[in-house]
Amino acid sequence: MPRLLIGVGKLNRYASRDSGDTVEVVERPGGGFSVVVADAQGSGIGAKLLSSLVTARAVSLLKDGVRDTAVHEAVGDHLYHYKGGKVSCTLTTITADTRHRVLTITRNTDITAYFVHDGAVEAADDSSMPLGMSDRLWPVQRTVPLGENIWVIAVTDGIARAGSRTGVAVDIGTTVCGHVVDAPNARCVAERILGDALHRDRGRPVDDMSVAVLGVLAQEASDERRIMAVTVPLRQDMLSEKEW
Image 1: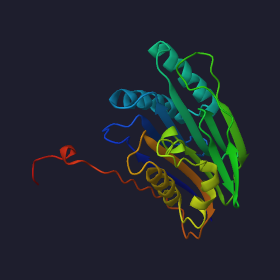
Image 2: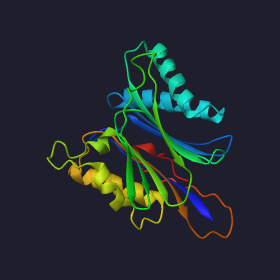
Image 3: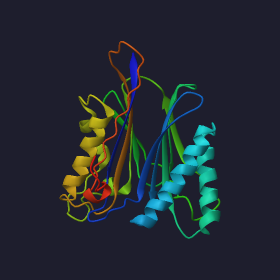
Image 4: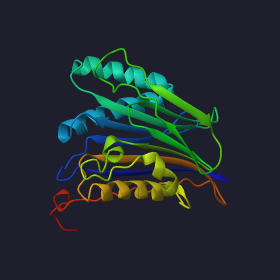
């Protein structure tokens, strides 16, 4: 039985407590899942609040059954009028639509996303303006059939441009295949991509980093259980001083 696998990797900019990137996963009412990735202008708490606003609006619309392109347009209009055209935020939505049996990636960003199928990489490199600066912005969308042994990978600019200041920047598309080879799950792919970007920035990320991975793999399964695991590091000041 094929398995739908989702993995997310995130890392704050070096010495920053708050990430301007936000990633959400939502189950679609007609069947399937979507992963929403927002990267707000700037960094820190202001950027975090902005990207959270964008993803919250997008998730709400997706839960209502709104199509991905319409979600991007509606969120863009809301952000423009709410913030007066003074801020911007990229938005990417990866969707496995089991009702229509397609995989789609919808983007308001100039950062390339990738499909990987049987060792071949297809770049979704057509660009679109970030949301928020105008009320006349439209997303770009790429659609492929929903089948086995396919990955969809989206990254924010912190990963795409990692290494640019240390002289070791690479084209992510040339390394994507190596990251998915023999990967047992989407989490492993996300960890590999994030780790590679961190290495290129010499352990000190120049910008917030996020990667979202959605894969459909043929895996042995004896039942239809759904499992999700989330791992988040907690600073000591996030914990209560009270004892049990």
